[in-house]
Amino acid sequence: MSARFAAETIAELELLARFSLNSLQSGLKIHHDAPVDVIGAAQRLFDKGMITQDDGGYLTDRGHEAAESLMRVLGALE
Image 1 (cartoon, rainbow, N blue to C red):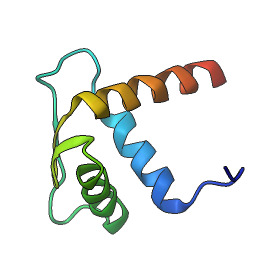
Image 2 (image 1 turned 135 degrees about the horizontal axis):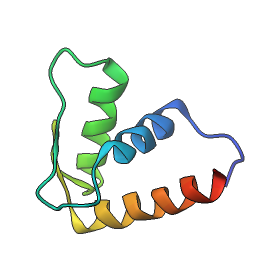
Image 3 (image 1 turned 120 degrees about the horizontal axis):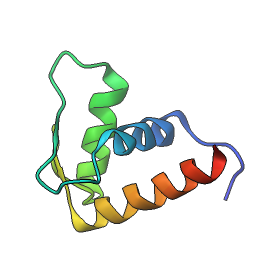
Image 4 (image 1 turned 180 degrees about the vertical axis):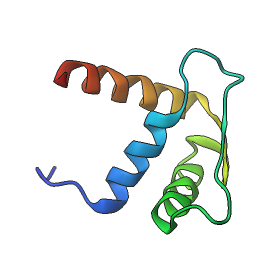
């Protein structure tokens, strides 16, 4: 694995970090006028099976696991 992250990967991580892990009923809606990188990140996360819709929705089980792992890494870096 490379020590550098692609801009697309960073956009996906930033979008995953926006989801609340406190409730499975908490989702996101990415609007059509959102920045292109956010729209692309949502589409890629959907294609990877991490969110339920290509414009946001809810975290899937896989997405929830990824978001939890991301939060642990971010917490360790604080």
